[in-house]
Length: 118
Image (cartoon, rainbow, N blue to C red; front, top):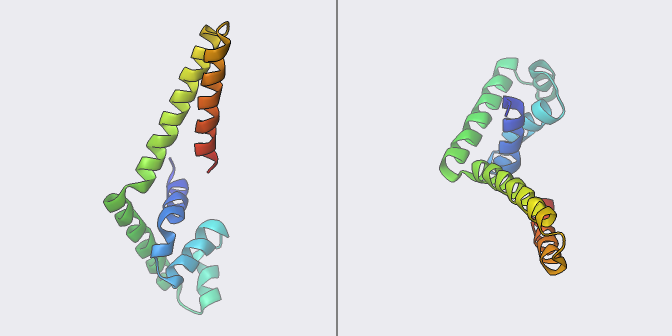
């Protein structure tokens, strides 16, 4: 996963743990795609101060992940769900003639889909 995607996901998981200012800087930089200079002008501070705030926020998010591991667990869960879904598809194909088993497998698949949605 690239650094921008990782930063966005870490922000999604841990952003509320940051100070208000650091959240604003992260949002403007990563979500609004503003430059450091544009953010500095927005807050009336130096470009260096924005850079320091951004790097401090990103470091804090990394530290939260190292301690809590929510993003890693989320990624492992997604991978496992995709593998299970593939296995279910293979079983449905293999046992298509067994209607009851196929229906049970479809029911399991719908439960898994519910997990992915939310």
